[in-house]
Length: 256
Image (tube, rainbow, N blue to C red):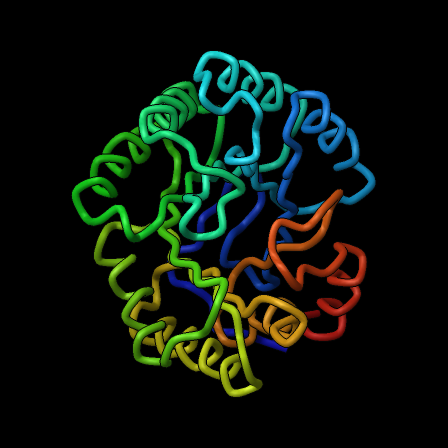
């Protein structure tokens, strides 16, 4: 079944964000160096398209040198595209991380080209996002601008407005993840995603409803314009994530 594709897909290491089939991303959520490297060893069995490093879980996240050392080691071990995420504690992050530590890690990771995407919350505002985009773009790193609500799903116009603001702030990829309280909430995400794809046809999107109620969005969201879904590798990073093998099976039915 065909789906609405972005006009400017992003290709990294022969993996296309915005291709005929949505990408399957596995988050690595280990806290210690040993736990993270164990997750890396598991990747060959899980076989995702792309990985997300949830560094807000790392024990050594406040130590920029130690964090960059681990990123460099992972870059040597992992051939897949990498998303770097230090999720803010106000949007579901594992713990509060100082802004200084975030800035140092993002700057080092981008300039040393240890990652392929960086995720930053829309709440940082245009100036901070433009600063990161100015650092990322010359180094071939794409900027994901994101918005999360782990309590509720706002109105469809509000969701659309967040995605539009992200794109206006320079997002190479726009992202929302929301918690539904009803079936209608899931439909809001589908509707906002499709409207955004039509009005901003070039930009890849990542959208989802979380929790068990929102699982259908992780499987069928691509039909409305979402270009990536998150699945369980070693452990989930958000409610409702589905194991990679089950996700692949569903994709075979929907997108092939």
